[in-house]
Image (cartoon, rainbow over all chains, first blue to last red; front, side, top):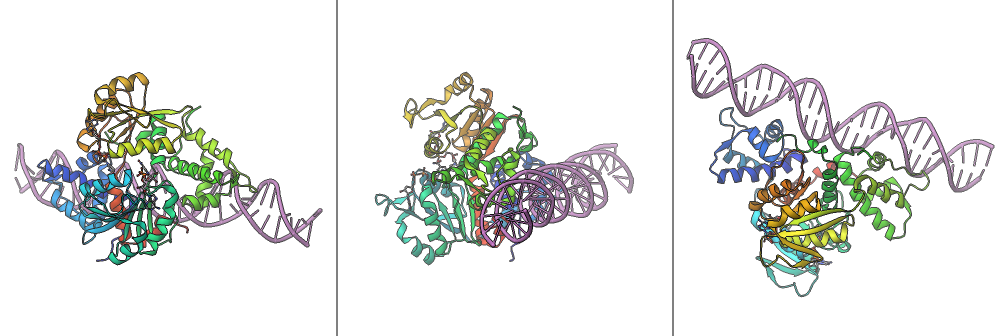
Length: 218
Length: 218
DNA sequence: TTCACGCTGTGAAAAAGTTAACAAAGTCCA
DNA sequence: TGGACTTTGTTAACTTTTTCACAGCGTGAA
Ligand SMILES: NC(=O)c1ccc[n+]([C@@H]2O[C@H](COP(=O)([O-])OP(=O)(O)OC[C@H]3O[C@@H](n4cnc5c(N)ncnc54)[C@H](O)[C@@H]3O)[C@@H](O)[C@H]2O)c1
Ligand SMILES: NC(=O)c1ccc[n+]([C@@H]2O[C@H](COP(=O)([O-])OP(=O)(O)OC[C@H]3O[C@@H](n4cnc5c(N)ncnc54)[C@H](O)[C@@H]3O)[C@@H](O)[C@H]2O)c1
């Protein structure tokens, strides 16, 4: 199947929609309307319909969208055919929290291994994830054909670790370190900017009134 | 001074620029050109110039932008006049990591107090931040006129805590819990979607080739 | 049957955000 | 001095994303 090239923003929202409708389905619901999902996700109804259209998911004017179909269609669009394996580098505070989080909330993603430089951590197993020495990143990633990595090391180490990951064949990196890493153009890097996010919240909290831009309804 | 209404995306990038030029200035640099900053921040030179224009910051064709001026101008634009105080609710794994992080990387933001429901944490001081019972959120937030809150509690608790915060006068919330919270329209909420971010990275790692959209140069 | 209703799917318009492009202005070198 | 460079500030063109608006359609009431 050829990738139908879903817009970046849409991929992001689809993931959120899925979480929401799953919650909804636990509550016993079978289907919902675009405006309901919009309200829950914080967007407009038209946007929801458009996003769902992008993944070829259609609803009925009577029932709205069936939750089953929806979850399946989103899965088909954004998940891989199979479970995807990732590695995590830097099992500090944040790294440990992430291992728990992924295990709990991302059923399609598996942290296959963790790496750290701290000898006291190497060899241990945290929540089912074994911790290896950073030295073995190249070998394990290449051998296991792992394509995605989470970076939770201090800023100073980020670039070096990233280089190793890329050399070993990683195609996507989620970087939590507060320093921009440079990679070849065919590697997708997502930079988590907590500082920027915090400062943005602080900014808009001060200029409150600008938030219509963000959250249209409700 | 009236808020010059800086676009959301620009606020975000400015924050990143500041971090980068600060690093640069530690390295001894005095000034840099738009294209240099662009490369470091992962954008285009034109965008950098445009962003800086938005905050009335101008450079010279000879030296580029002076780092001092730049940091000051960004500060003027996005920081408050004074240091801003925040509270954090939920001092678990993530909460603890965030306290360290803010202290280290966000000089203009101060976590004034933390709140938790766990009696074993209440009364303790973590990295200079005292932990109070959730019960006292309303009182302390209102009394201290705190306007920004970080939410790092489990999803189930998020809405209830948010309601309390809003009632006490908070205007901005950064929510790490994986559930969308509803607030009055005059409260700015930033939802941190780790799941969505991870799934996005996984998606683009698979369809690698879509990343030109993301990172144009280098 | 017929009509009004409410929601979907979608083209078209609008808005937001990004890139291109170039005049202006200073520097460097001859 | 003067002309070739370099980089800014900024306007205009372009792209992406969001919203509007409405036709189409199954339903249920009359
Ligand atoms: N704490 C937060 O909330 C937060 C938020 C966003 C980003 N970050 C960033 O994420 C990173 C990790 O944060 P943290 O709070 O977990 O820090 P931490 O110090 O608790 O953890 C860092 C871990 O990385 C390991 N490490 C150091 N150098 C390494 C290397 N070269 N190779 C492999 N492992 C190495 C350390 O042994 C440690 O286990 C930091 O860059 C931090 O700035 C933190
Ligand atoms: N771990 C991650 O990497 C990560 C990433 C993104 C989001 N999150 C989310 O952030 C939240 C916190 O994650 P964590 O890993 O720190 O979990 P955690 O269980 O370590 O911490 C949660 C903390 O909140 C406290 N708490 C529970 N109910 C409360 C209430 N009603 N009022 C005040 N405090 C309360 C608990 O006592 C605990 O200290 C969760 O919702 C998690 O899903 C986690």
